[in-house]
Length: 227
Ligand SMILES: *Cc1c(COP(=O)(O)O)cnc(C)c1O
Image (cartoon, rainbow, N blue to C red; front, side, top):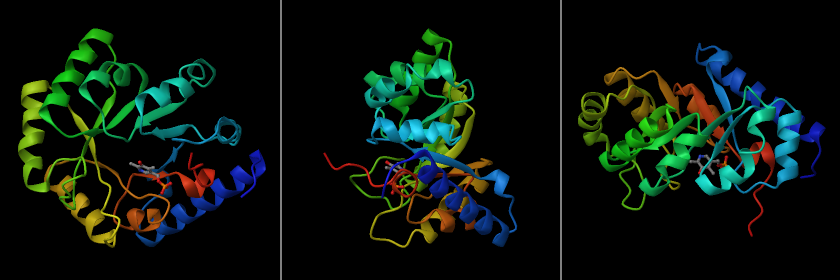
């Protein structure tokens, strides 16, 4: 895959078309699905191409890498929206709150406490998503589905947090559809409107099941350099 603004724009338009078609097939509006460009580990030239092509919503999975990439660009793009989609350690909570507009990976009380303190200190209030470990995988972040309702109650009552959405990363070996359906059911049962689900290989499926944002990395930017 070669790199230019035009080639980025062509890939982006193709993905937006596919999102629109999947939305239409599900009786949904394309405008209700945001394309989050997952820029983690991508070379800087590709970030510049993305910005030149009009992409404004980006997902990053590491706080420090995101700071290095975005701190200096913030001032140039008033409509930039940065989303943290990777696991967050409590000692990085303040940096995350200072940088991100959306934190999608809230999954434990200790992190809620750290985020609350960081918000009070910085005066910033990023929108929050709870990550759900739909496959109940030992090694994966996220709250287990049976614990979600209690966690949401605690977030509301103990921390005063309004949770905007739920996020999941299905197990790689499973078909994604049932995990997306489960996340949609959990959101509906708990009165939550937004669903962050779907990546390069399955974002059309995610739209079918109600995704309001899809996190697309390699299909949009090209393969991440492995180094
Ligand atoms: C890397 C990553 C993505 C994007 O993955 P692609 O397969 O490159 O689209 C999406 N979500 C999360 C949480 C990620 O870490």
